[in-house]
Structure formats: structure tokens, C-alpha cells
Image (tube, rainbow, N blue to C red):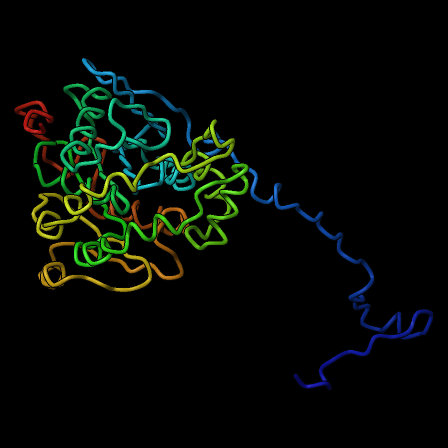
Length: 353
């Protein structure tokens, strides 16, 4: 820095304190120091209602399974969000507060996660998870579902792809997959148990869990962590502390099923699709060829961790809404001027089981 560009600070009482240009002194009005936040204040949990409009429990007929959902928005297609393993529907909370201005959003707690209650919380087979999604959609919308844009993150992305590939949902209008690629996911499975066992297991308060999620790097956005992390915990009465709600370490037998053949299924899904990747382009061979052939859109999102929708929610929302706009997805599906959408010939869940 050139010292000649620095204006000298006059001593108090000298004539230089009133210069001819009437420039305000840097010390004339000291800014008020913001109050120092304690750790418990900085990581204090926030409520789902700050972002979503309502929550509901979806009771599946003829079963004891009850799936918890968060909803927002009143118009447009339904952006139906599926979270990753160990997360919850509130992983999409910050995004929901912006998406609801342009579309409807529903985020469900998958089996074994959040406030959802099922007869078997550790049956996370891909068949069961897909069946759960179809059951929730059927119970919520009956025979006349609106246009659905499936959004899935990580494990939820795998579920979204499998649901779309079944081609049993005629109202499906788009597919958004967030940071999951078959090749990378399959290669990482051998490390998953170690990753799960090495993470902190017990927390004295939800605030401590939120703090851990940020300081460990699993999440990078404090506002999102404050609303999403508490829903990933359960209180252990025997140990008098909080621990992880999802028992992922007990579900290893299902992990390969989530990701095996995922790339081919993604490419075979008969709807517009976009793949959002965190930080680096790491497509496997099948997806690389598919992208070169223009079969899907891909965006590499910089400066984010694995949970793109939590770390950079504004950018995530922009990408999702632009995808919907670009593909002309309205409340009843793809909207082509001058063409009427034909009636559905069969219930959308008929081949789901």
C-alpha cells in the first residue's frame, strides 16, 4: 500500500480536525459492537415453521406406517424432495422458503429418519424405499396427482432415480439428482462403516450436535444446520443424551442396492433430468457418454460440501427453478402451447409394487 495515499489522523483539538473538505473522521462515530454470541446461542435450534408452511403425518392405509412430511407453496408443480441417509426432510428447509414463492414443495422424512414411524425402521432396501414414496404420493394425491418433480440427495437421489426408472408415475415431469454418482458411491461403500463409527455418537444437547455438524465439515451453513440437525437426533433415555436417529450402521446389506446400476437407470428415466455435483466433475463412464450425447443436464456447484441444498440453498433453488422453467413444467406437467395434456390411462402407482 502506498503510504502517500493515507490521510493522517489529526490530534484532538487541532485545526486539522475540521478540514476544508468536511470529510468525516474514521473515529467520529464508532460502530456499535455486536453482542458476543455464546456457543449455545450461535447453534440454537430453529423451527421448521420458519421455512415450511405446514407439516403433516401421512398414515398409509392398511399399515402402521406413518410418514412425516413438510409442505410449502400453493401453486405450480410439486417438487417432491427425498433426503440422504442420516438427514431428514428439513435438509430442504432453507430451499423451501424460496421455492414456495414459485412452486409447491413437499419434503418427506424417509423410513427410519426424522419424525417418520414405521414397523421396520432398518429396512432401507431400495424396493422398500421406492414403495414408501409411491405409497405417500398415492395417499396424498389419490388418482389425480399434480405434476411431480422428484428431487433426491445422495441416498434419496438413488431412490428418486429408481422411482423414475419404474415409469409408473405418469405425472412425473422432472428428475433432479443431487451429488450421487454410481461409480463414486460404489467405491465409497467399503469405507462407510468406518465413517459411521468414527463420527461423534453422543451429544449432551441439540446445540452440541449442530456445532459438531459445522465444525466437522459435514454441513457448512449454520442456518441450515440449526433447523435440520435436531430432526436427525433422538434422545437416548438410558444414556441421558442425544444420538443419531437413523441406524444406518444396521442397514449395510442394502447399500449396494441403492447404487448398483444407478447410471443406466438415470439415463433411462423418460423425463427431463439434471445432475448437480458438489465441487468436482466425477462422472463414471456411463454418465460421461450420456452427457456427451446430451441425455441430461449437469451442473458442477462450487464452494459447497456434499449437501448442496443445505450449504448453498440460494444457488440450489435457482438451479431447480431454472430447470423447471427451461423444461416448461407447470402444475399439470410439460406445458406446450396449443397442446392439451391427454388424460391418464391408469393410476400412477399401479406398477409400483
